[in-house]
Image (cartoon, rainbow, N blue to C red; front, top):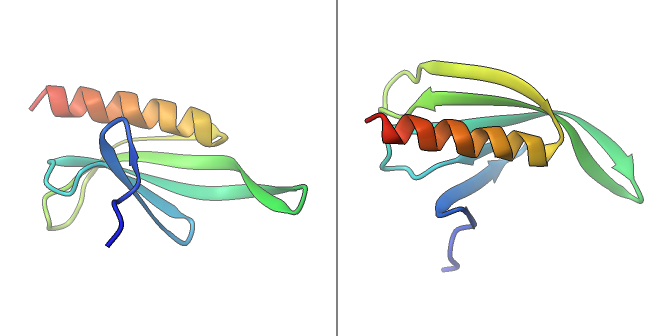
Length: 90
């Protein structure tokens, strides 16, 4: 079995247009929903992403913060900041 993809030590998993960022055992995780893509050179490039910080309790998840960002880089930037901040406050 291959190693899961990681960014700054936290797991990244994708299913269709939803990307989950964070470790499954942590109390918070990030959900990024790709809402718009632009074709460039035969590839779909992410142009808009909705980023949500949410609880990860195994029950009904609660959204703490939500924002829309242009492009995956800006989405990952705010995702990492929010997740690190939430995990520090535990």
